[in-house]
Amino acid sequence: TSSPAEKSDNGSPKKGWPKGKRRKKALKDMTAPRQPLTGYVRFLNDRREQFRAENPNMPFAEITKVLAAEWTTSEKKGGSQYLTAAEQDRERYLQELAAYKQTEAYRIFHEQQSIKKPKIDGEETMQGSENDLLGYDIPIFTEEFLDHNKSREAELRQLRKSNTDYEQQNATIQTYLAGLHSAIDKLSVETQQQRSNNNALQQHLQHLRTAFSNMFSSIQVPGLESPTVENIDSFIVRLLALVKEEPQNAVVNSVRSAVARLDL
Image (cartoon, rainbow, N blue to C red):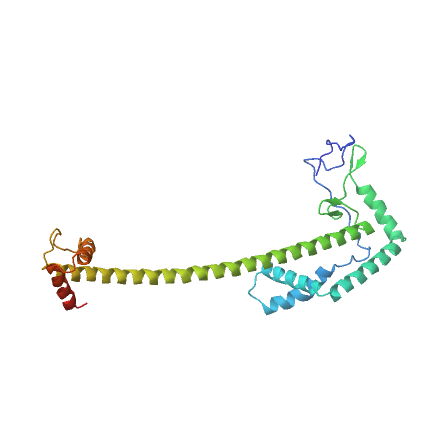
C-alpha cells in the first residue's frame, strides 16, 4: 500500500497507513446479521469431513486440491445446489442487513466505530483488518462488499478452471512422453539386434577370408603375392580379372579345382 506522503496522479495526497504504526483492530458488530457463505465454502463444509474419513492418510492440501477439482466439475455440469443455496443466503443477508440498518443497535455500533477510528492529518485511515478484503478498503456491511466477494469467487472459479486445463495439458504431455520413451526403448532393442547381426556377419566374413586365403595359398599366380587374410580381398579381385582375360591359363584350372574342393 502507499504511504500518506505519496501523491496520486492529480497531485492530491493518497490515503494510506503510516509506516511504523500498527493498525488498530476494527470493532466487530456481534448483533449484525450472519454473513452469507459462498457456494464453494458450502461445498467444502459439506464434503471435507466425509472425504477426510474416506481418505485418512491424504494430506490436507491434497484434499483441498481434489475437492476443488470436484467443485469445478460440478460447476461445468450446470451448477449445483450449493450455488443456489448461496444465492438464497445472499438475498436473506441483504434483506436482514437492510432491516438491521434501521435499528438502534446499528446506529450505536456505527457511532462507536466512528469514535474508535484513528485520524491522520484530519483524514480517516483505512478500516481495520475486519473490513480489509485482500487489500481493498470496503466496509463489510454494504452491497459493495458482497459484489466484490462475488467477483472474487468468480475469479477463483476461473483460476480453478485454468488450473484444471493446465493439469489436462500436463497429462497429455505426460502421455506423449510415455509414448516417446516407449519408441526410444523399441529403437534401442532394434539397434542392439542389428549390432548383433552385424557382428555375426563380420565373423562370417572373417571366416570366408581365412578359408579363401588357405585355399589359394598353394596356387602360385604370376604377378600376385601369396594370399593372406589381410590381402585376400584384393587378391580375389585380381584373380577374377585374370580368369576373364585368360580363361585357358593353367592357373585358372587350378583355381577351379580349388573352388570345387572348397567346403564352407
